[in-house]
Image 1: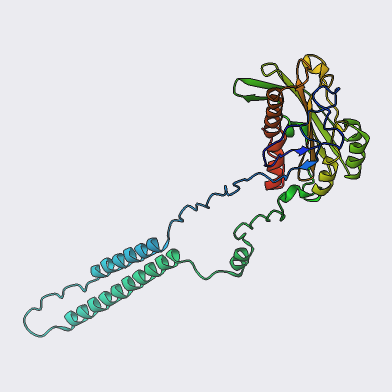
Image 2: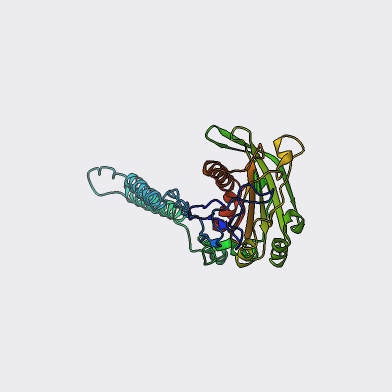
Length: 349
């Protein structure tokens, strides 16, 4: 059994007492193990930088105070200009001698006309200034305006924080209720360097028992309240490897961990063959299998060489183990990590 480095997908390295001697030459369903001891690695979630929120950039609202002041200033200027035009007409030059009655009457009429004109002009100016001030300055808010301001939305409420614990939202199906989908978990192809990996087959359903081999593992998954299973088989002709990976949706992380401990030489995911190509024979050779846990999800993976040969050397085992790690990181880990941090599946493009 390959030993994975510590991390979110550190393997559950399984061995049973008395099976240390069983090696790569075992039949299909076996796995290579260098130790007969049970060594359960610590599984920790990925480190994610989730602070992607951008500061709210608010466009400046055009100010109205300056405009109002300018209008008032202009109005005041216009008032002075209009007032300056209101001048008393020049008196007619007096001719010598006492003014006659007619002259005095004429002067009185002129004075009354000038006074009337001045009063009229002043009233017009005062009215114009008052109109400008009313238009440039909003009046007191009406009750409806107060009501509208009271009902206007305030700052957006902050998103609820993720549940405590290393698995956050995916610690339980109660906080991660949206069912998984094949498209979410398994992309059609993967690329790593010169090697390309294509999805040869995919299947989902609720018959978790039928997607497992081994009565102990089947019973543990049933006790875990498995609600769905999703499997896919990938193939790389260039790397000459193939694998079936399955995800099982259990109620809680604790139940998923209990189920993972049942995985072993005769307890593993049922291989999913394709209708054509090398993966028709997946499971007929000797390969490596792993059980992993991420939150309330149990992940089981089986991998082997396309020529069905047993991985007898360390290099052969490392090659298959590397393929398994790549497959996990580029398929199920993407979706489950998003669910763990955001509480919802990733958007499908």
